[in-house]
Amino acid sequence: MNFPTGINTISIKGVANGGMAEFQEMMRQQLESSMHTELEKLLDTTTGAEREVSKKDFEGFKNLYHRFLQVKGPSVEWIKIKRPPEDSIQPYDKISARGLPDSMANSLNKLVVVKLNGGLGTSMGCKGPKSLISVRNENTFLDLTVQQIEHLNKTYNTDVPLVLMNSFNTDEDTKKILQKYTHHRVKIHTFNQSRYPRINKESLLPVATNLSMTGQNTEGWYPPGHGDIYASFYNSGLLDQLIAQGKEYIFVSNIDNLGATVDLHILHHLVSQPNGKRCEFIMEVTDKTRADVKGGTLIQYEGKLRLLEIAQVPKAHVDEFKSVSKFKIFNTNNLWISLAAIKRLQEQKAMDMEIIVNSKTLDGGQNVIQLETAVGAAIKSFDNALGINVPRSRFLPVKTTSDLLLVMSNLYSLEAGSLTMSPKREFPTTPHVKLGSSFTKVQEYLTRFESIPDMLELDHLTVSGDVTFGKNVSLKGTVIIIANHGDRIDIPAGSMLENKIVSGNLRILDH
Image 1 (cartoon, rainbow, N blue to C red):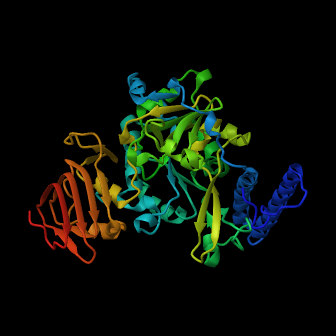
Image 2: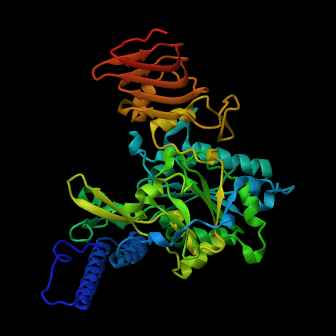
Image 3: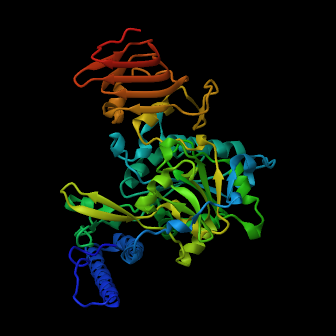
């Protein structure tokens, strides 16, 4: 932890190490006291319900800030990292081989589906919540989620509710759209992530001057990562409400992961454990490919299963962390968690998650930091935690228009809100698609395809520059299309490109 400029660089002649430690502790206490004073000032800028909500949020923030000031160096000692024991990460095949009982209704009635819905669509050039972007046949991420759960409820005559964790960025727009699902067979609840103040990198104090979200203060606030789910779910009262209804587990995933559907085999495994050995936390992991080298992985650390993120890795070991041979799996962020355990850990203040320090530069050029946590990092706080190595198909995130092209194509078929790989594709792996900067924004991307190409036999596609695709284009093998600066390439309707490199200033490519 760095103290404000000047403090940690002061050298006092003759101060022994012990004296320096005392000095640093004094500075820590001073900073914490200043932060508490600033937070009180912020609270005094409003009244009523908003003040009460912010007061609860600030309690969580104070705890995070206190821990941030205490941190000395990396949160893991590399030498203590061990591979997880064999039985702590089970292959999915072993779980599914046990089969399912005649009725899944009892198990499903103990389940709640939670989607992390705090993110905006800005990285894909869209305004508003990312969950409202159309991804397939005019269906949004949220539409597909509702369809999946409604299909479950109708098929098994159950009552699996959907819970959305919104942020202050997405709450208003999401609530407006929820009205359209009134007549669907799925109960939808929402709660809000906390709202924490961004901290000036120099002074380590809040940049906001009041609690409003207007003017200069707009940039003064942030939602503190999905690790906030435990506290905000508990604080909202919804956790207790669902426990009272007999719900036992939540299935949590990112709303943009189209592979994260309710898996009956994992659910059955959870609810069929003997009481003394009840598994409180399951993390779905999957095999790493070269595209996933930065993903968090599971390790054994001081006798507990633990999530190791790249941000926690000492610089000297980053290449080792990225190695597919040493760390073979990564976290999909599909998690199954006991509601009773969340309640217990929250009440005991025993939820332990590493702090992620995220540096940002605001529009005006001011450098800030935001303190965040990740939902999977809490795995070490739960009893009998388990990893399940699931098929890659359960990890289908849409982060870019390259991902969007895959899920819009004939590689996948859509049924009851779920996407499955087409049986016509000979290989179960998805092609590697890399679209250039002309395709970054969804609106621009859509104008460049008259129709989505046939990609059933595609292995690799790279497109760079000003390129458009006509109707009924077919792409096979490895296709690379590069339009030079100032040039444009139009792929005509009906073209079939197989293992082709197209470049230069061709206006139209003959086929």
